[in-house]
Length: 85
Image (tube, rainbow, N blue to C red; front, side, top):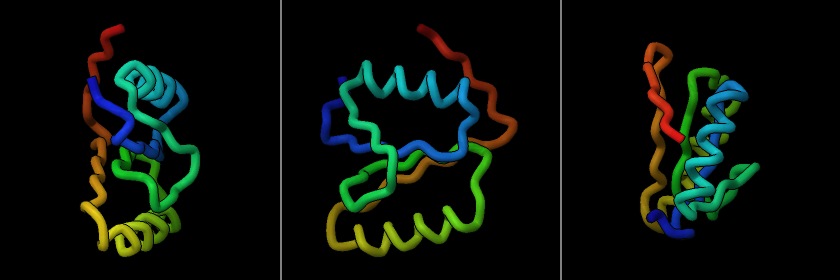
């Protein structure tokens, strides 16, 4: 089980994928943030990312440099996910 030390922000997912990710995060005990903040430890990026968000994420990573590294995972457009619930 993932504990609340994982502070996750989701961006660029369609509503169906985002809902499934929210369920996974809730079941794992991770905290999901609705806005970017210095408290976030992980960012999951979908396929719909715009340049303005990339700039915000870069600024956040600079602010987080003094603490443990910010983890960012991008999902490729052609990725096939198998969701099990």
